[in-house]
Amino acid sequence: MSKTPGSDTPNTPDDAERNRFSARAARYARVGANVGGVAARMAGARLMGGAGAGNAAALSAALGSLKGPLMKVAQLMATIPDLLPPDYAAELQKLQSDAPPMGWAFVRRRMMAELGRDWESRFSSFEHKPAAAASLGQVHRAVALDGEALACKLQYPDMQAAVEADLNQLDILFSLHRRMDAAIDTREIAGEIGARVREELDYRREAKHADLYRLMLADDPQVRVPRVRADLSTGRLLTLEWLEGQKILGFTDHSLEERNRLAQAMFTAWWLPFSRYGVIHGDPHLGNYTVFVDEAGAPQGINLLDYGCIRIFPPRFVAGVVDLYRGLGSGDEARVVHAYETWGFKGLTRELIEVLNIWARFIYGPLLDDRVRTIADGVEPGHYGRREAFQVHTALKRLGPVTVPREFVFMDRAAIGLGAVFLHLKAELNFHQLFEAAIGDFSQEQVAARQSAALAQVGL
Image (cartoon, rainbow, N blue to C red; front, side):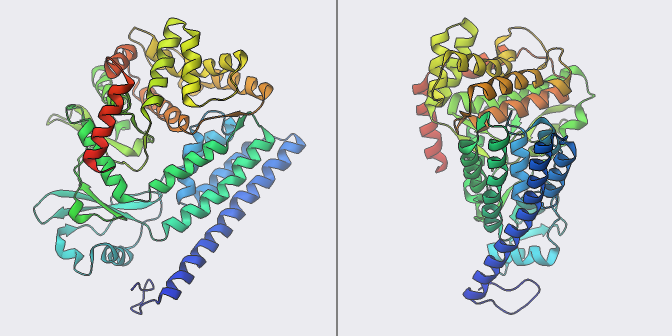
C-alpha cells in the first residue's frame, strides 16, 4: 500500500486514484495554459503579420518550465525538418533535460516502492545526490555488494499520467501548425512520437534494449555498452554498470586524429546496428553518451548510456534506405521511387519525388561522396541544411500537405543528430567508405535473420 509523500499514513486505493487524477488534472491545466497562451499569441502574430521570435522564446520558456515529458517531445520536434518554423525550432533546441531532482526522502520512498523496505541493504553504498537529472527520471551512483560501480536510473513518480497529459496537449501545437503552414501532415509524426515516448516509461524494455546493443556491438572496442543488473532493476528502476567517461564537447579542440576517432565511433554506434539488424538509437542527444579515455587521457571511444528511445524497423524499411542510397548514387530513378514507396510515401508524382530528393541528397550527400570531407563540406555550421529545408518547405506548400510515414521520423532524426555531432567535432572522414563497410553485402533476408535471432536472444 502506498503512502502520501511526507506521511507515514498509508493511502487507500481510492486515495491513490484521486491523487493520480489530481496530478493528471493539474498537469493538463498547467500545460494547457502555457501552450495555449503561446498558441494564441502565435495565431495573433500570424494574422497581424508580426514577427514570431518573441513567441518562439515564449514557447521555449513555457515548455522548459514544465521539466517533464513535453520538454523531451519539444526537443525531438525541433530536430525534424519543417515540422516547426525555424525560429521555433531554434528555441526548442536550446531546451536541456535538467529537471529539478527528487530530494533524498522522496528517493528513499521511491526505492522502497521498487526494491522493498530493505533496499539499502542490497547496495554497498548509494549516493544521496543524483549524478544526473533528466525529463523522466534521475540517475544515482551506487556500489553493489560485489563491488561493481552502478548507475541507478529512478523514474519520477506519476510519469505515465504526465506523459499522457503532455501528448494530448501536443495536439494543440500540431493542429496549429497544420492550419498555419500545412506543408506537412503531422498526424503520423504525432503517432510515432507518442509511441516512442510511452516506450521510454518501461525500464524493463529499456534493459532489453541495452542487452540488444551489447549483443550487436560486442565486436567493436570503440563503443561500450553497460551491463544490466537485472537483480536490481524493475519497471521503473534501471540499474546498469557505471561507465566512466567525459563529455564529448570537451574534445572539440583535440587533435584531428582524436576527433576523427570519436566521430567514427559515433558513426559505428548508430549505423552498424541499423544496417545489420534494423535497429537505431533515436536520440543522439549529447547527454546520451560520454567519451572513455586511456591512462594518458587520450580518447579511445564512446560509452553509449541511454536506451529508452530505440526504434526497431522492419527489414523492408532498411532495404528502402539502401535502395535510396544506391539509386541516388547511380541515378536509378526507378530504385529511388521504389525506396520511397517502401517507406510508405503515398501519391508520389514526379514533382513530389524531385522535392523529396532535395532532402535525400542532403542527408545522403556525405555518404555518396567517396572522399575525405567534413559533414558540412564548407557550409557554415549555423546554415547546415537550411537551404535544402527552405527549398523543400517552399515546394511542399505549393504541392499540398505530404504525409510523412511514421518510420521515417526517427531515421531522419538520427541522421540530423549525428550530423550535429560531426559538426561539433569538426571531423574529417570518408563517410562513404564508413557507410559501405556498415552495410557490407546487404540483403534484406540477412537483416531479417539477424534481427529475429537477436531479438529472441534478449527477449524482445
